[in-house]
Amino acid sequence: MGTLRPRQARDLGMSRSGLYRAAQSGKYERIARGIYRPADASAADWDWIEAATRRPDATICLASALAHHDLTDAIPNALDIAIPRGSRIPATETAISWHLFAKETFGLGRSAISIPGSELDIGIYSPERCIADAFRLRGDLGYELGRDALREWLRRGGKPAALMAIATRLPRARGPLLQALEVLT
Image (tube, rainbow, N blue to C red; front, side, top):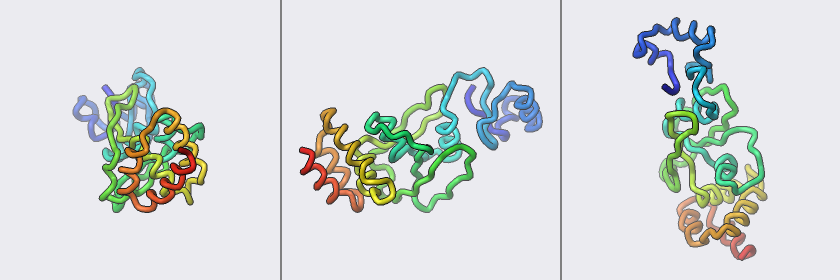
């Protein structure tokens, strides 16, 4: 069994207060407000679980996705999660930085991966999308993040045509990426 929410406790023949008592006695671990896991469950990333539970369309992006793809040495101080613009940003207890991305391009370069140690899935952006986003949001993220990720991606054999196919569909990404590719290739 994976994560459990108080409203699902009845399906297990337990009341909400029974779930709270089970958590106090150590049978369940409280991940965040309203999210519990069995104490004997395998290890999992609680930030990922909370993001996927709060928003089924949650997508790992920016520095967190670049770190997952081993394209940066930077260690993000919070999990970067993208959700479609216009969505309500949920209240969370863990270190999650919510980003609102345009609905028209939200699915661009997005795939789903399983959360290790859990039955949940979470979205993640492709390396190409993450690099394009790093260039497009370079004023907020810093100029080095995108440049260093691009350099590592090219070193591993990344194809500039695939990167430009995504960058042309995102605002403010094509020009800076072209300039960086001219310098690096």
